[in-house]
Structures are given as C-alpha cells and as structure tokens.
Length: 274
Image (cartoon, rainbow, N blue to C red; front, side, top):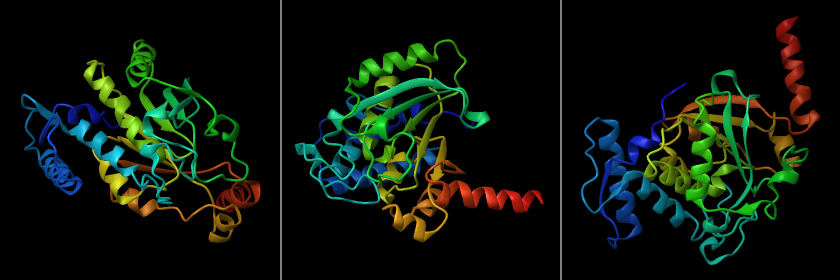
C-alpha cells in the first residue's frame, strides 16, 4: 500500500497567510508553486499565521463549486448559494453522509478499508447498486470534526489499511472530503492512505487538488463501449486525466448492467481461459 501523503501537506507552507485576500488565480499560482516544491523535496514547514497546503487545496475546492466544475460534467450550478447541481448536491457544507463502515471486500491490498459514502451522483447509471443509498436526498448532514473523530476511533484498532472515498462520484464532494482530511490532520490522528474510488470523471483542476492527497485511484470503468455509455446517459470516462496525476491508478470493471459490462467482461475472460 502506498503511504498516506495527505498528512504531509498539512504541515507544508502554502506561501499564503491565513485570511489573506488574493485572487483565485493567485491562489492557484501559490498552490502550484508549493506543490512543485513539495514534489522536488524542497518544501518548507508552515510558518506562523500561514495557511498550510492541504487547507489551501480545500479552499480552492470550495471555489470550484461557485459555478460548479467539480466533475467532468461541469454543470455550472452555483452550489455555494444552495443551487443543486446535476448530481443533486448543493453547498459543500450541506453534504450528506450516506454510510460509513469497514469493508473487507475491496482489492486485497486495500482491505479492510473504512468506506465512506456521500450522497449525490451526476451519472444516474442504469443498474447502479448504490442508487438507493446515494440519492441526493438520503443521508444526514454532518460535522467534519465529528466525522474525523468517528474515523479515528474506527481506525484505532490497527486492522484497517486505508480510508476510501466513494459515491456515486466522489468528485462532486471534493471540497468536503478535503475538509474531513483537514480535520483529521488538525486532530493529530495517525494518517491512513486515502483511496479515491471514482468513475474517472474528474476535471483537470480537481485532479490538481487531489495530487499529493490520494494514494490510490480505484476507477470503476462503467461501460465497455461508447454506445453503452450513451445508452445509459453517461459521459465519456476521463481515465487519461487520472493517469497524469501522481496517484496510483487501478482499473476494474463495474457492476452496471449485464449487457454493457458483465457480459462483455465475462466473454473476454472466457477467451483468455480457453
């Protein structure tokens, strides 16, 4: 399992004073500069009154929801004002916790993992197993600090190996995921590797914010063909964008619909076994 890297960013200086009023473009410039320094091993620790790099990422993620560009659909909803996006999610602070539990059925090197579902997904895939769970109206609003405490208690026994963000598509809640990680870092909890279990529907900006935070990208490839994707109302997967990020990409087929996913996958496997 790759190490937890997000905790490192919580002690790296961003070059931005807490509360300093600068343009979004300048905030991105500071982010990119701090990330380059971190990758090259010349990052410096956070100074007094300075915003750490993880918190700057959270701030920029909130900015993405002003006219929402958190996922590849870029619906433009003004979520910070309470307008719902295509996914059904509204302001990041109103995100709903659909479920949190220890799961042992993921890939062996990830298991057992603490799996966390936030409600809302833009794709509405036919045959989605989690649709009743992740409907935008389901779940409960939560405090990031309290959730961080719950996660810390679940991890205290030492059996779990990772934290896993799920959806739907977790990209739509990027700001809130980062908020939870900031809360964990501020509490001084032992960091676990962060796994991004998504659909490959990230934007370039989202991936830049996930860079240095995610240890493993676990991508569900929903469909075997363009025709299947269109028939099910899904957009084209953005897998190559993830490959450009610094995380560790993993692929797996989804359990979407038999004709577009399981059936072709099983036929391909049968050819390999014959």
